[in-house]
Image 1 (spheres, rainbow, N blue to C red):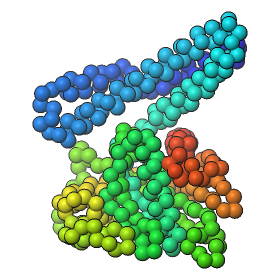
Image 2: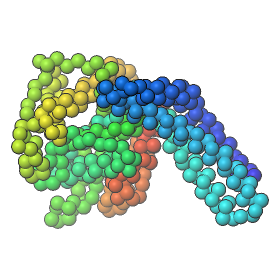
Image 3: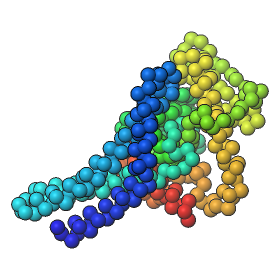
Image 4: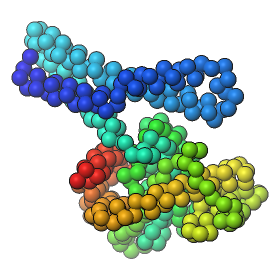
Length: 367
């Protein structure tokens, strides 16, 4: 075996061993056994929501174990494949070994990033809200482009999405939108996207074809669970109902089924219009409101500690630029990660930015 390949394999083996240690495979196997026992219970589906949670968690943890086992097997196989290729002086097979080595390194890196998600709510589903900011009709169009980017990313990974609310702008685009992405650790993954996203392009809405800079803000919340105990007295909530509408004000529902909740003490407003009934819309809006108030409470509890941190790491600051003119580039202003093909990024290829953001956040927390 060549010295270079041997060094590469030792480095990957060390990294994979570290990943296995952080994931605690013994504990993971015990969790799978417990979930399998629950899933085999004849009473599992007496509570459909609880049954769905058990089967989802079981599927995810089985998948995690399978990923690690497959990576370990691939690592063991590479050395054998290389020796065979060397013995037969097969250049084609040596090329395949090199390609497999690069692929394996990438897959181990992906799993390593997952192990960095250890925050209190990182393992939960994500509730994403996008709002247009400065830039007029271009900003509204930009907000809709961002929404599509995240929905395409979720689609690429096979993650279910549920759009709670869309407020359309008059000319084009959206004023705001809220949707949920369902997958283990998707909140921890997407939370690094929170902040202001900036677009520079030739405006399609300007008859003089001038360059326009527009902004949209992305907010990412963890989905609340029963264990969170976010108590909201009824007297603190104002409930408004109205008729759901689509682009251009076209009615999509003949009853006042859309719901807007206002939390009077804080002024936080949440709306939902995409469910079939007023009751469903109110329940969905309440979950988003609870998520907002939960993080607000946690932020207040950490306020003194956060005040001591470097203000430059605030999530509220501008965090990424998407430049379509006069050159083509997407650049994250925190991590320096950049891509020269904005069309791919806007079509949902954002894993590189997510990985860089997760690593950056971990390093900033340890600094």
